Length: 272
Image (cartoon, rainbow, N blue to C red; front, side, top):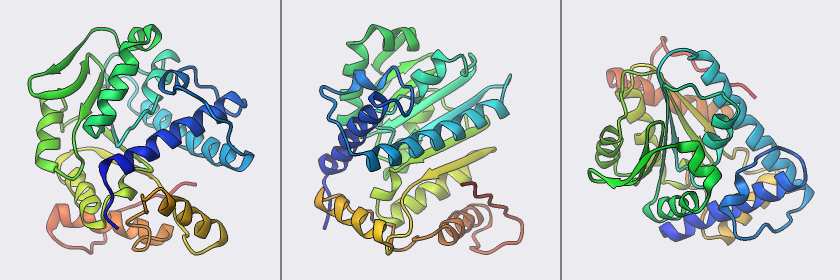
């Protein structure tokens, strides 16, 4: 069943409320997530645990990257960022030095809503400093370090143009993050995004956090949940485990470099 953008965006609202509930129950400290919700419904302990592991894992990946580029310019691109608060948390903790540039990309409707939340919150505004709105053909918010950009991840030419217009440089060390986002895209489009990243950046790391093992007990329940929201995980069947996920990224990197899907010179490291 074809999904609308609004249905995919609905997962953002569910995720943000779940993270807020997890934070309020003391699993993880996030002083900013509450600025992006109008209400914070209490979730079940199992959901709290799942979101705690999700936030902890992504936070670890971001901090590890920031530690690895300490003292040099670098970029983080969050694909389908939604109402993620990573920039605000990391900036407040002193982990983001002045030459680290965050690019958050999502649908126009999500970006407009997130920008509105930021504009209504002094603590969020204090984090990003000076900025411009909807300038030079880029819809969103462009600051000195923080960039919130409206762009469809499936329209790669437009995505690239928007990122460049906002200041992106393909020569800088870059972390691309997909936190439960490209799994909602059809397999062809999401694989092309991976291939695009491999072909464009000189020094890039692609971090993916998404669902696997659809056929065990939890996986079956998980799939029913997303189907009930009319937002099925479109690439889960093709890449149901770590091995298939690794092969997916290796093959796309190889195609980007030499047009072949096989090579002996690509190393993929998977950390749990």
